[in-house]
Length: 262
Image 1 (cartoon, rainbow, N blue to C red):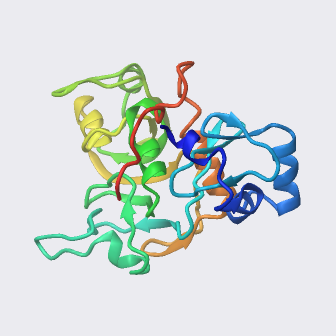
Image 2 (tube, rainbow, N blue to C red):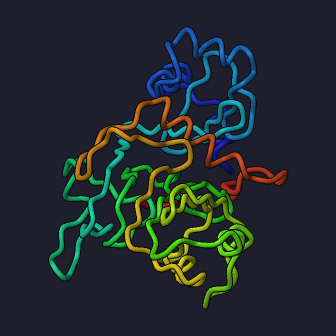
């Protein structure tokens, strides 16, 4: 029996409006109105007022967008400095991104920035959102500012936009703008290893400095290198929407999948 069958007749668990309010979607009254309007589903079924849910097993969506409801989830936005590695532990003893945020609860970086790359990185203990933000199917954009050697020509910029051939295959089309003689703004939705650096090398303009300036809808020009802050509930919700926007008509790619363990 699926999770829908397990929970449909439950008389334990938390009331749905309480769970939704805890995520920052609004007051309990506002969440009751969402439920009454038929905008909330539990395991694919339109929820009714009074529904109780199991936050560890039930899949809750609002307007078709999954909502992370397990208690204790945290979301940090870090401005990673150069020289810090995007892992929890490093055999070479280098400083890690995990060491720059609170030790408890334990979190992991969402994707990676190589040691020489600076900029925005999300750390969380939310395995589901991590999957959706990093899996190529969902196509969440990442924007970079790349200071390069020399001034790329219009033809070189066009090559980046159209896709360039790398040793692991051609890149997908990207949004690229030359914002200064040796500064490119590059927006991609793939997540290959050192992709932006390799793209720029492919057009003959190696990267001298690389900074990630945006992850999906999330940006913060005031966050200093080496510092972090918690994402607001509205920002988490915006990430959830961004990580669901490119799912095709077949429905969410979570259908039929086991929850990832983190």
